[in-house]
Length: 118
Image 1: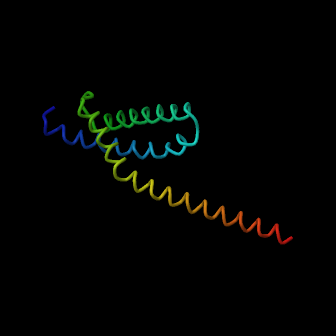
Image 2 (image 1 turned 90 degrees about the vertical axis):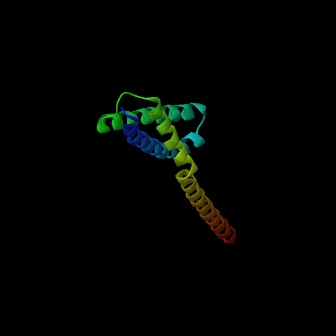
Image 3 (image 1 turned 135 degrees about the vertical axis):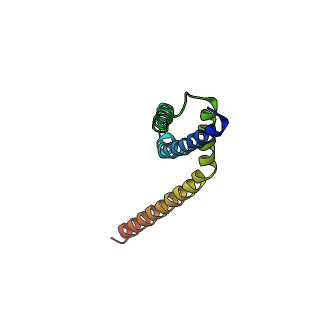
């Protein structure tokens, strides 16, 4: 494959990396909540999903045999996701979490206020 044909393959591999970054974000709450073995299982599941996405892209788009630049494209895609979209998702996750904590505290305060008046 000539170097001109390698650029679209690299970009598609970067897209596969971005998609796997979304999957990593979905597994992130489970990884944080539970212990080492659950985190290990989620990491293994992530890498299996990344391999599956790579195989799916390779078959669908007719990639050549696996090349190092394809792995590099995956790494660049994951890096781009973690440095950009992940920060936005993390911000909204913290915003929702803090809102839920405030609502829970208000309800608890109301319940304690009702119990003391009875």
